[in-house]
Image 1 (cartoon, helix red, strand yellow):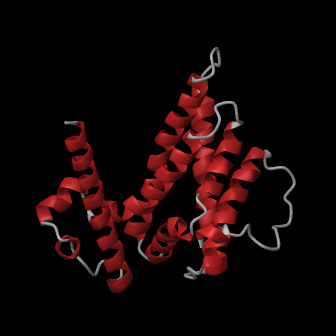
Image 2 (cartoon, one colour):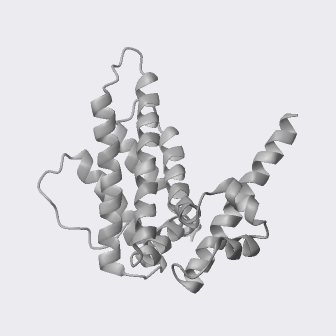
Length: 222
């Protein structure tokens, strides 16, 4: 029974990923507004009905790219030591996402949605949706520490700040690199995400000049 359920969940995850990949492929090739749910379903090898079993709209399917990256970051965060400062855990979680293939879909979606208000808003909603997940992850961290009080204001201010730092890093990266998705450009994006959390952790003290070179991706991951 457990094996059957696991296989079922794996199949559902594979279908969901196929839909998202098809939507991103069509966005890349056709541009915003130039493809339909039926086009996505055909490319993904599913029915129109199956598409709507997973996503309510094309925008939601594309937003799953951003959600996937943020979910990976949260998984890394949850694996950090419980006694580690929470912002250090957030920074370390981002550093673990060293593979360019992890960052690339997030970066590409950002570049492709800048000229479309509906898609841009959908992507922002994906970041905002992550706020509750960050709150829950932080609450879990505090709950693991006996006697540690849980301050809802702190949790929500923290989550909102982390999300804002992520958005700021994306904006600065796009202003610097545009639609460049080379490994060097993605290394810049990764470093900006890390540095933004670093600024938050330092309380936004006096700004320091940016590093001459971004932290490189580990060679074995390239």
